[in-house]
Length: 485
Picture 1 (cartoon, rainbow, N blue to C red):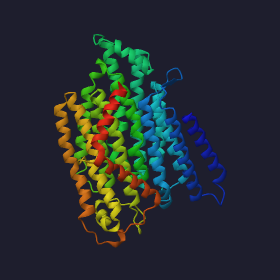
Picture 2: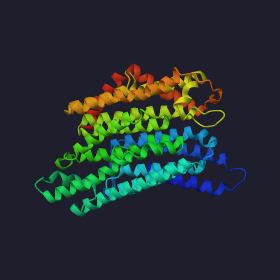
Picture 3: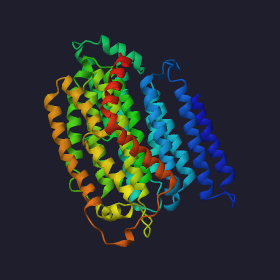
Picture 4: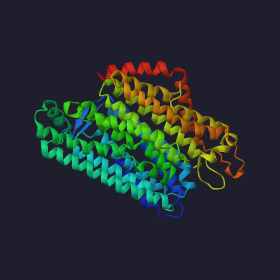
């Protein structure tokens, strides 16, 4: 029901656009705002429908689609994140001369692709979902038509994304040629009975999974397939960067969870060292690469690479503790990214009508808007992992799960790299609080009501973790372990 509701809702929005886009009274920003409000209503209604059937374990289309608690959790986060992006884009699209109605239609279609990825229980459905999501992301990347940087970022993302998709389909073809299986349930039984003595079949399966995992690591923005992240994050419009940082990773994480926790057998254990190397390399590049950057979105792009490394390390453990820690890390990272980008999008300069892009432009933020600067500082401290904020607890759970499984050295390396990454967060905080900027043209416009609600909510949740985060996470951790078992 939620999927059919979203599909018919998108068709309804498209019909409204076709009927009223050529009307001189309703065309333009007025139509875009109305479609945006209807789109937010559709997303919230779909979220209610998902929560209404969250207790049902469902398998349809001959096992091609499956619903379980993990998929409901990730889909709930995706719908809420997309709704918040729509709320934040109400004023941004009009000020930056973007196409309002096309933006919301493509956004919901991209969400439908993510829903297909999360619910897929078959290689073919998985590939179709990834391609549907990727096509929407390619369009969103080039949505800013008057910017050559956006065109360059969209073209680069399209070429590299097509290469990653070719790796994925190549791995699926090899796996099907070796086993004749595409359904994940059949794959699970096959891997559980496969013996390592079967040299030819085992090596063929490992080769196919290597190509599949390489494509998925590219989609999530992990090293060594991270080269597209800084350029794409910098080139696309800021509201699209916020969407790229929040929503698309959830579908790929759901696939990795299925492979590394459901299909974890002797065959996949041989690839565990690959994930460990990718996680360490991602955290290293994300921590060191941003030290010499001066543009805020490039710094946040390297931060996203580092956080992808932490998520990969949590998945490498292959334990229930690692699964719960990754789930909590996703939620807290979601909260912090929404807080950061809501603060950046709210910082609209009066004369240039653009958001703050360079670290030097943060110098007048503390005097221009005290509340906005405080929220921005709290989000930066939290995402850096400073106790007792929420980001500290998320990293603590990842490190505890790694130590429990015996990854002492890797955990120590990640802790040291996490300390290194706090340097560029402190650079941003220093620019906000201690650097004075005498250029009065950097004064900001008044924050809209939609931004104020999102910023206030995320600040409240961050402060709530300061007071009750330890007790809350400990209780959730134990209850989640019992639930997963």
